Amino acid sequence: MRDTRESRLLLVLLVAIAFALITVDIRGGERSPLAPARQAAAAAFGPVESGIATVVDPVGNAVGAVRDSGERHNRISVLERENAALKAKLGSTDRNRNRAAELDKMLKTAGTGQYGIKGAQVIAIGAAQGFSWTVTIDAGSQDGIARDMTVLNGDGLVGRVTTVGRSTATVLLANDPDFTVGTRMEKTNEIGFATGQGGDSLRVQLLNGKAEVKKGDRLVTFGSSADKPFVPGVPVGRVVKVDPSNGDLTRSLQVRPFVGFSQLDIVGVVVQPPREDPRDTVLPQKPAKPKPTPTVTVTATPTASASPRS
Image (cartoon, rainbow, N blue to C red; front, top):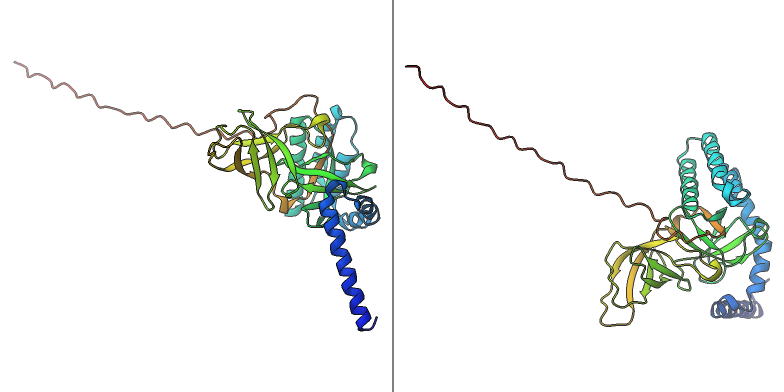
C-alpha cells in the first residue's frame, strides 16, 4: 500500500478501533463481549506458543507426567518416582537443576495441601487481554483445565485461570489490579481480601479494624464457595507494612507475595481440591531460633596453707 492520504486515514481508523476494543474488553472484565473472541484466539495461537516453548526441553516430560498422572491418592508417590528419574536424566546445567528443584518444591507443596494438580509450563507472558498481568500455560481443556481454577507453584499462589483453549490457558496473576482473593491470617485467623498492586505487592483489607497484626505475619487463601476460583490454605504472602487503624472499620496491610511473578516457569493447576482445609500446614516451617550456648564459669578454690610443724 502506497503512502497516500487514504492509507493514512485507514491506519488511524484501525488504531482507533483497536483502542476502542481494548477499552470495551477491560471495562467488561470477565463478562466482556469479546470473551468468545479471546477463546477463539487462544485455540488458534495456543498450539503455536506451546510448540515453540517445548523445543528440546527435558523438564517438559516431567510436567507432562504431572499432567497425565492418575488418581489423586496415588499421584504424589508416582510423581516423586518420576521426578527422581527425571533428575537422574537431567544434565548438569544450572537451568535444568533449577527447574528440577522448582518441580520438586511444587510437588511437595501439593502433597502437603493434598491438592490434586495438573502440571504446566509458562510459555508466554504479556498483555494478551489488554493491560492485565497474565501468562499463558501449555495445558488446556484437553488436560482437564477449566476456568476459575487455582494456580500455584512451590512458593504459593500464582493466580487463577481465566480463559481456556484446547491446549493452552490464560492465567490472571495475583498481582494484577483486577485480582482479588479472600485471605486468612496465620494463627489469628483474621479474614480479609487481597488485591493486586502490580509488581511484587498486594494490598490486604482486614475486616477487623482492631486486628493485631505485625510485620512478618503470613497469610493464606481463605477459599471460595465450591473451591472455585480458590482452594483454601495456599500461601499468599508476608506482611511488610501495617497502616495505622485510625478507628476505621477495616485494617490495611501491605503484603509481599511469596511468588516471584517475573520468574514464573513451572506451575500447577488445582483440578481437585483437598478434602479438608489444610489451614496453615502448607506454609513453610519457620526456622527455629538458635538457643544461646550456656556458659560455664569455673571458680578456683583457694588451697589451704599447711600449718608449720612444732
